[in-house]
Image 1 (cartoon, helix red, strand yellow):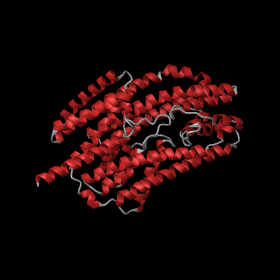
Image 2 (spheres, helix red, strand yellow):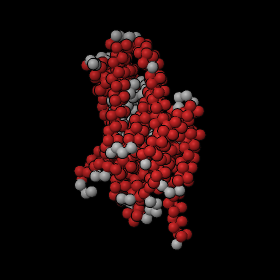
Image 3 (cartoon, chains in turn green, orange):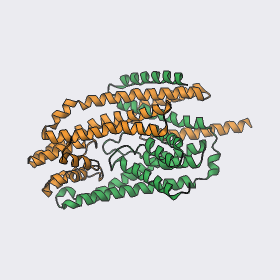
Image 4 (cartoon, chains in turn red, brown):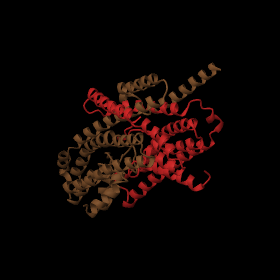
Length: 226
Length: 243
């Protein structure tokens, strides 16, 4: 893991995920499921990427980036999270990866709010009629550049923490892998519950009925599969 | 097929949120996206005024505004139309995309993993499913917007985006149930103390259903950290006691 190209590419994936979240495209590379798998593939362990990215995805499933809502930023956060889990193999690494991902996701959300305040200063006067045509493009590019710089700082800090975290602490993690993963997924049930109430168009009761139907079908499928 | 103006608006729509700010929201992005269609700099300034909508459906607004400017509509009429579009496009997009299709596509990818798909396949399934709708919606929006101009409301009503949003949200809900059921069955196969796990998961789901959006954003993430810390503490104490 000393190849500088891998570090650069991890940074690129993190910044790409951050820009994709709001500023450019919204193709949903910003989702931790995608950025996690990309980071894992770069690090030679796509399954760990999927595990950490997938857990972060489930934990953030109920986020609606509607309007100007302040949201967390789990996509870029998944990249350092996956690095941590890959560097510190085992259940302690998974716990560290998820914890780092959750904390960085929240930090990333706070920096997005800060950057929007900078943007507010940059666009001052745009609607007053004094701007030449070219200035709109220049300001847009400047806002994009700031967003990229912000994302690079957050992802870079996260990668540094993942590398610097003492391995001796990670190996002392007392829970086995299955229980570690299960606890994280169990917390994800909270996000699913929130999603169900927030998205149930026919009211809470109809939402609960649809959810129960799906739950029964899933249990039946799972019991047949395993 | 889209013409050159529509193609330009479509491409520029991908950056409509690049200067998102608390003063004009998408205003500057909207003005920049419309710039090649506007000859007068005063029109540019008008379009830089506060405007917000769902980014995927912003193409409806961009197409319609470009058509109105081309047809030489009265600026005040354009301003009123722009303001009237804001809320409906935003709420239609939020319901259809953020609350329905996006979580649905993610859950399909999650279910495919639980049923044996590889990490790469899961990511591709999600991106393909989501972007099939995303790109279709953007392209459709710019086409009907530019074709219908101020009459675009009729096209929006005809395709019943609200009904599509309802179906997408119900689909996502069903898929979230299937996903949790599969996780439950997997837990039953691989974990000890099954009853405790099942009760814990149901209790957490119940809190989510009960409190819903009144829970602060990010609650699930913080709960994960709390559960991990609690679980580690319990196992450490149990191990210490058994010695």
